[in-house]
Image (cartoon, rainbow, N blue to C red; front, side, top):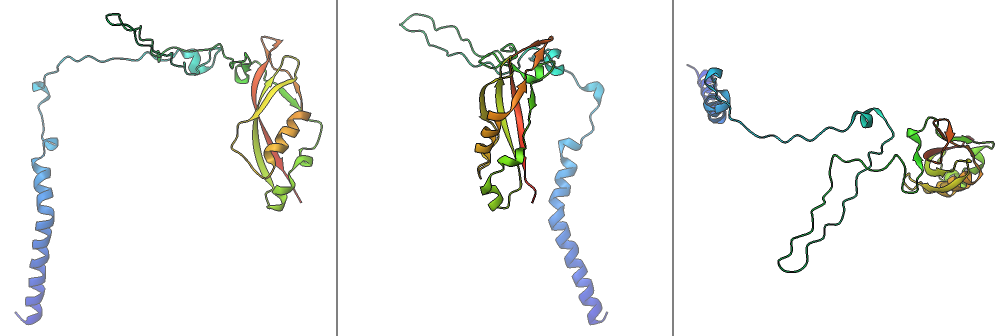
Length: 207
């Protein structure tokens, strides 16, 4: 063998040894692992075990209904006082319990439970309220979502912004717009009902 052939053979043997040293432990562990053993199903015995199941929510919640799936606030647990007296009853939250009647704390029905939600009647151009600060900053579109309590006669009882702070005067402009909008009240079972509604206001300015 000439010098080239001897060098080539030596290099090949060296690489093979390196591969064996690198992958050998992994291959050995894989072939001896319990995960790769084959078990005879007829020889496997089952042990009894206890399983706790949580009752599913009523179908009316999944498909829509008049109940409010808002979380139940945990009642305060007070320890018993006095030596020898029993502790107060533990009244932790029942995770299967639903609270409310489909209204907010003030009794305004959630609009998505209504037959017809309140309708905003806008008879002015929203672009008139586009903030100058936004135009100066080259911002030409922004959406501000306002949560409103609408009375049975269509008047606004309260309004608050629930979207992240928009800045550049958009939040202030949204409240000015709300003060001008008229509403047709929402209805449930054919009757006007006071409702809670989220109203997105889209401010858009074109040069």
